[in-house]
Length: 291
View 1 (cartoon, one colour):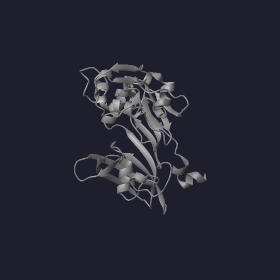
View 2 (cartoon, one colour):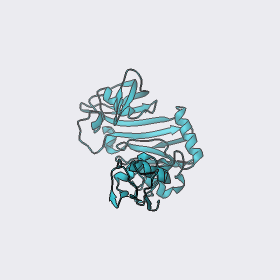
View 3 (cartoon, rainbow, N blue to C red):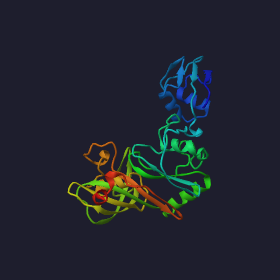
View 4 (tube, rainbow, N blue to C red):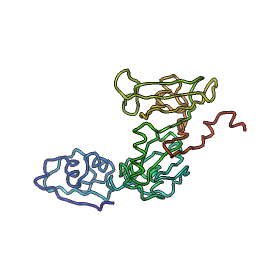
């Protein structure tokens, strides 16, 4: 943690915006300083101030104790994640639905990465470092299943090379609205639109998926998806485009009010590394539940 800082506005800073002056004084991005301002960690004359406040000569600025983004996440031993496999500098865990992959702010502690740092502090600084230390790939918070972290730089680089070289086999299971049947190869182009992605004719990123039915029902069906590419929200947007949104995925058209969307990362494999996570009850075929 960075200690509290106090400084007085001199002639060079007078007339400038508060966020710009603090960013320059502490060697931080203005975006990060705005987070500190929003959290009331920056005070002007002892009181919280707006980011656009224009400073005057002699103003006193206090920056309360804060964590730099590059410092890495705070360990949280209270979160215990099932270990699916650990080898070759990689660890695969079974992430529950509702748990984000990594923190967005240094004081955020309820993520999978915070849990991993508690038992593997050596991963701090690996890969992208900071609040994304060791992260090999991502899952949406509402998606459960296999999530992989790298514990050393060599393992992270090798894993990212496998993803870039399209050598990674990813299998997901989802329960969708409607009677889905058969097997389909789907090719779409997806473009980011804020919190959503949308299907476009031109531009965007190519998203390739293979979908086949595990169980067809009149109201919901169970499907397995193999991702040929790794585009943001690829599975969710693809199934919605087909008229079969994932149950619970309100963002992409589900009418079910649940605390998660029913999508699970069942397995992931490349080269000599593979991990598989058991399906949650709501994503098991009825025949399996009956046994």
